[in-house]
Length: 103
Image (tube, rainbow, N blue to C red; front, side):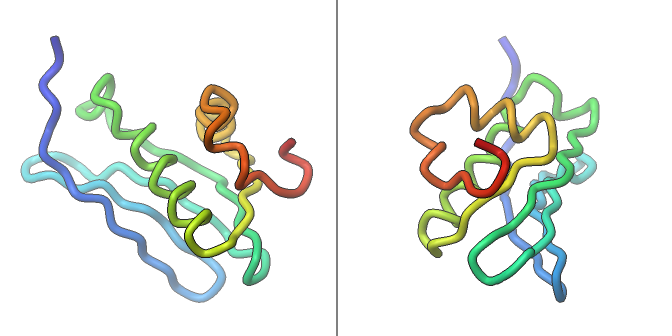
């Protein structure tokens, strides 16, 4: 059984780039980065989860947060990051936000 850390996920945007960051006391940040193609589409390009987070579901939680925000804001996602793409493929209920060549 793995301990699930208490963490928060925040979204940070600067210009045409952004990231979701998972933070917990005493652990390095985990992140999922994205590029803003236009107001209706983002490209998820990287998910980085340090070893200390592995097996705790934080990578999946980062992707899920991105999907939920995209859905709420009417934004489409192109998941170029292999991890994000695999997570979205595993969750048919998230695939409504896919856009572009990712389908």
